[in-house]
Amino acid sequence: MKPIVTTWRITVCLMFLTLLVSPAMAQDAASTRTVGGVKSMEDRVRHLEQALGRGIEGGNWFERIQVEGVIEFEAAHTRTRFSDPAEADEEENDLDLATVELAMDAAISDHVDGHVLFKYEEDDLFVDEGFITLSGKDKYPVFLKAGRQYLPFGYFDSHFVTDPTTLVLGETNDGAVVAGYRFAGDMVEISAGLFNGAVDETGEDDMIDSGVAAVAFQPFESVMMGVSYTSNLISSDGFSEAVVTGTGTVTDMVGGWSAYLTVAFIERFTFVAEYAAALDSFKAGEIYDSADTRDRKPAAWNLELGFSVLENLDLAIGYGGSDDGGAEFLPEKQYGAVANWGIFDSTNLALEFLRAEFDDDAVETDTVTLQLAIEF
Image (cartoon, rainbow, N blue to C red; front, side):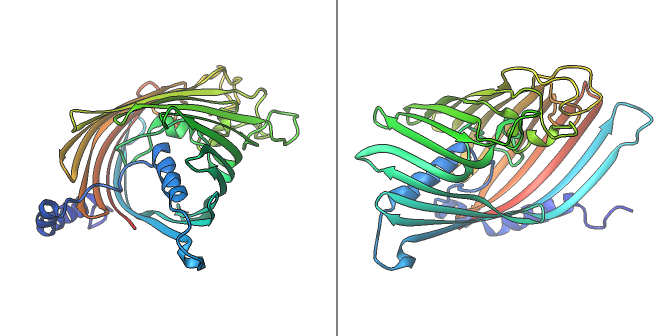
């Protein structure tokens, strides 16, 4: 029996409500979109820069702490179609609190800062980030971050609510030590770090034997590009779940690389391109399916073009996909469109449609997602 109130009806109701209450705000309040979309590495770096740039404002402890947060509510409808006529199509609706984040930054001294990010996701509450930053500020543009953090592999810039395929393949959150240096007027940043990794080689001890390195360039304010490397791609948050060996290990550690480019032009358009891939192949039966007879060398890409219609309304189209992404892990093709509407200050309403095609079109999904998000 289908639910009486479907996701589509909820979508229409919310859109109608925002049409009633937001036009005056949209025209008079110069509201800009600060929430909505995937949190890219740029967002994390910007947050770190803001925290490091605050300085010490007073002797009281509460004057040294800054608290920020995000709340995201999502309504989604998914239809799955199978090429095999023996399998019936499936439909699924869902309403849920998708994400809650609460970040606290503490300015300990002029060169020492602490950062903690608590996160609620998929009915779990956990510490997503927790690290100490030592920095030389403007005089010595170096920094060192020690603790649980998102490693500087990939960029993952996106207008969409749903994670791009590059993020699913490469985003890595782990305990690590990462050092970096900026030069050429902050146009170039290099960073490198060490971490243990969630997946080890078969028969090897659990050691700190994984590394990451990245170079980022910003030759102009509207252009961001870079490359990065990891010696342990399978230890990314999403990809590590694809290991199917009985021991949870792999025969040989496989590195990965990523390259990205984000360009804003004509004051209204933003182009996003990113590619991430393994540098070598995983042995047959180690990832996706233990009965697999082929070696796998996964790669993923994401292309997006965004258009700022109004100061508080962005539209974007995207196309992504993968090679050797498995039957269910990464889609061979993924494309769609999204609208991000800043209905109030720090309040975003996003409507997204995505089509994903898996495993030689054996499975195809259409997903409509409505997200209401606030940032404080």
